Length: 255
Figure 1: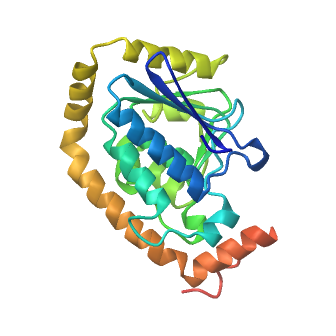
Figure 2 (figure 1 turned 90 degrees about the horizontal axis):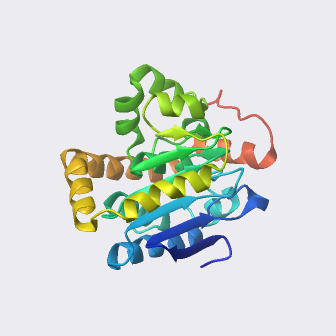
């Protein structure tokens, strides 16, 4: 456990909780390392049947911690955020997410790689990569258009529009919205999974993922390389400076 990532195994379920409310559960490189280690542990231990990921009651995660991100930018496939992406994508055990409040950036794209996603009523998904001078990540440029259609995906990925909990369910990104006790109700789903035959569960998940696995891996790698390249672009520098200075970004000088 780190200060901000809490893990415990209860009833054959590994629970991963993002708990950094003073920074809206923003993720640092050490938090990515902690979640990667927890996921790897879950995949290796036969007594763990399911994985449950959540944040605090009113916030999932606001995405990357900007200060930490600028101090430790991803530079290649072995960077903490990319290791986390691969580990979650390749996880053999079923992953259940419970989300309320902000799910920004990777907080939204990681949901595309979970097996079950349950939301609280205040859940809001946003992928503001282009606004930051960056590009989509985590195969979102492949998976999101397939789920919501090209035009809506363009609004979400290019304009960075916010998706409500109801729309996330209607488009297939999430399973359901729970008005009350969303974490406990999502955890009940994890308990049901954990009570089922574990080898059969793993095989069913593998069979469902296999048809797109190579394409998803290729897209993650392509996006990752472009993301690292974009980080050093003048547009991204302007966007980050504007964010830190709490002013509107000015992209008018760029072609």
